[in-house]
Length: 170
Image (cartoon, rainbow, N blue to C red; front, side):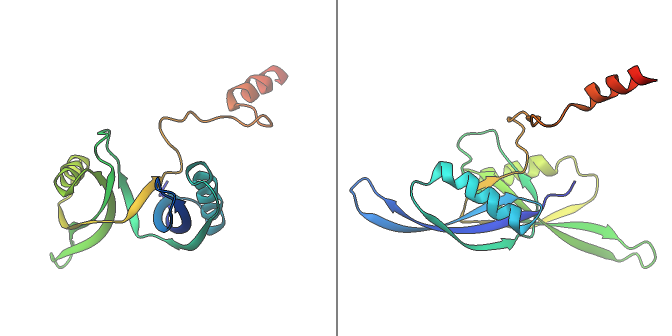
């Protein structure tokens, strides 16, 4: 299933260690099915992170198609990569490039490039990395996180339980 990435711009007032208030404007990326769900999810996630009021001042679909995460704790920045997938036209034989955009974790541009190369190493089609730039994205919220086990809501039953009940009626 393809991810629908949204960029959410959030503004809030942060109180520094010196007691001074500072207006903050931050950008977040999250996966959601619709604008409504994106707004709901970003609000839910930021309630845990930001003390006080915050405002979602912008919400738009992103052209990011893939997320390249890293297990290295030092890779705390996000870089946007433009990757051209090269395909040859069967009839004319001309090369055709289609661009895909990746968001890549890295401590710096070199580690982000290494992470991107590692991610693309399984590609069997030719590709070319057209650009890799720093972003101001603070955090990313994927739809499903691998480290969080899915919880079955109390009003639903696992499919295996339902199949066992159906077999008993035959």
